[in-house]
Each structure stands twice: as structure tokens, then as C-alpha cells.
Length: 85
View 1: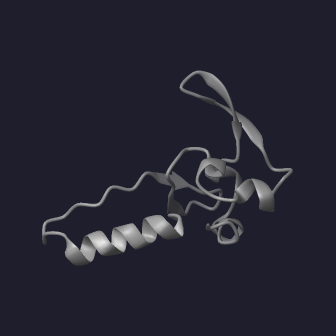
View 2: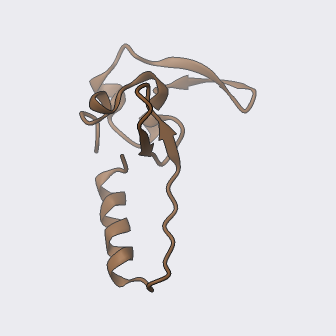
């Protein structure tokens, strides 16, 4: 799940780039094991998930630091289809 602007950028790069172009995607896993592309480990930094699932914020240790936010592991792919921005 890349944001729409990221999807457009990836598509343009593929159309206009050299044939050996490599695209990078930060893959995050969902609760049901699907891999999604996300710009950040916290989904609220790259989508409107905080508006859709207001009560689903969690806290995890990220690099040894307690981090609050919305994380892909707490949602299914179907859940996340509602928050693409």
C-alpha cells in the first residue's frame, strides 16, 4: 500500500526510467501476513489511518524506544484498503 502519489511516482519511474531500474519499497507485514509498501513504520505518518481507526493506536518498542502509532501488524490488508491516501 503506497500512497497514491507514491504509486504515481513509481509508475512514472517505470515508464520513463532505464530498463534496469530498481524500485525500493519498505515492506511492512499485516496481521494476515500480506506485505504492503509503506513510507514509514508508523502508518499514521503516511496515511489517514488515525482518522479511520481512531481507537486502534498501539505502542511498540522500535529500536529500543517506546513508540505510539498505528502499525501494519495490527491490521489486515482489508482494513488497510480503507486508508489509502
